[in-house]
Length: 337
Image (tube, rainbow, N blue to C red):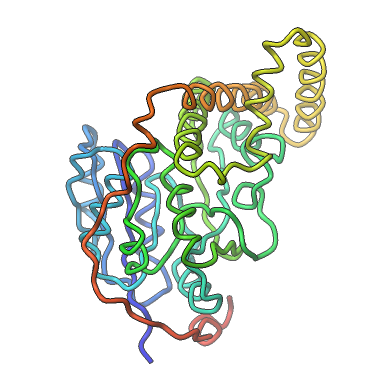
């Protein structure tokens, strides 16, 4: 029985700083049936397009919608592989990443599989920001943030899935801001399991400054609210902690709340200082920025224009489904894995 073919897809916009490392990690993948690497460019004004075109097997697609969700849908329309492996323009894949994704899809029968988001800083500031994002009290305890055992989850980092199934559920929603992956996982989860596998490994380059972190997490919170408006049952208790912190800091008990919160941040930052003294100041700054920006963005998203929840996910052209049996070929393909 032949192995599934794979399309690797990357939505990008001005990613010249990190794209070369990303594509280098893609072209050396151990899985032999990668048939194409599709880079959907949202109109980059830097050297992103030239870098992508310099790699063998890469096809650059125009993404007039600019945003990631639109780029992913452009790539889905163009893809020819049985499996789609979604990659970001500033992450680096382990050499067996695609191999592990295909194996997990086949062995579990899941609708979508993925691993953890592992931020790795390149300097002291980024190391502190990365540590905050990996911390359970930073971006939260979800397994795609902090790791954990294999099993069903709400969502995964990036994700790999059968292309036909992605077409059947309508591709990525283009009206939920930057929460397109999680919203897509909700609809994919209605067709099967969303499966976390810690052996699917990659690293991610976080934002370089605290200001950019604050903007990033505000967008995350606002976009999560857009998803909640479309799927009210998707909200989890852990996701309400930051919004409730914002409310508490505006309440009559704000002094007590602030004192308790500040004590927690300082205590956790002192612990971080024993591990990485140079990165600890950025860690201490990133924690409250992440929490307060996400929480404020969430409330802003709830009360802003209802257009986020109005439109249905984009409809893509379907093609006949292909069934694949679970085949345990990973050990044979990579005996040292």
